[in-house]
Image (cartoon, rainbow, N blue to C red; front, side, top):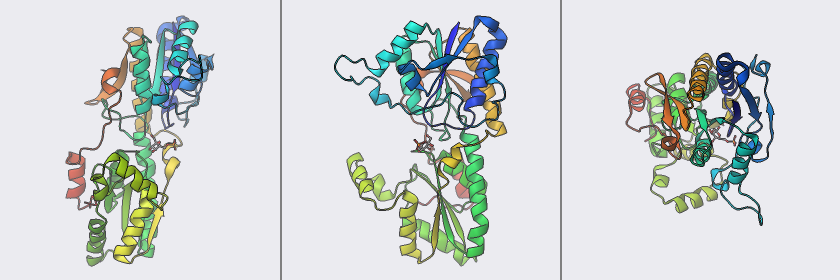
Length: 358
Ligand code: F6P
């Protein structure tokens, strides 16, 4: 059996341990009847026929390694079926040709939202695909948790922990901007775990006046510093009412480099306080996977390998009620899992006295 593996989209912790989980299980159960090929830089390698045979040793010693030994790249879904220059095949056609000519019996694809749309497209065109849910954003539909998420929570939490002491010493307001794209999972979870005072997420549009009031309330109770965990995708109440076009224009006209700096300017105006912004950025995606992600990727890897042995293709291995289950790719592709604004975790944050900025 010839298996091609690729990692696509933004990297995160746990990619290598997931590859290891799939490979070890396949080698253990199928012995030398399986040949695993590592496809370089995600779909790029499939489009450009850039892959190589892997040896069992290649999957040793990578359980704790960050990044991905296969490399990754972003290949937008919308470009997959775009016609190229005259007579040129589309990226999709090139990928299908690679799979056919190389004789891959199946592809194991590790990725997030964009990656899953393309994986589903390949599956619809007859390719045998099994996928694993990767992203620090935790915004993939069909799984309660994605790998990378728990490691990123640890990092974002430790950033806010460190900011705490400086905020206290200087009696300042600090904003820590957390990644997560259009979803607030990472900000919400790290914000609660680190004891942030205000959490601003895209799913709950913010009001600068309400945030200023929360800061004032803390000061009135004798607390001279405040920490805001702000999602990179945060939007204001005014922006939430805009059409897509209006929102795009408003953001293009924004003079600050990111939403946190804009909120800082708004709060400076309203409170007259000194505000500092910290953006850990890609730091949140790097380094070793936490123990929870190592365990999760190992379980997901085994489950993916078992689907391959059962010849059950067109599925993502997912977590539901703490069990690993197969979810059809067609159900996952193109859907975003966002934070329920009235869900239990948001209610817990509010019960703890945190402001959600609204
Ligand atoms: O999807 C993961 C993520 O880190 C998002 O949180 C963030 O918006 C984006 O990727 C950053 O992308 P890039 O690495 O291409 O700058």
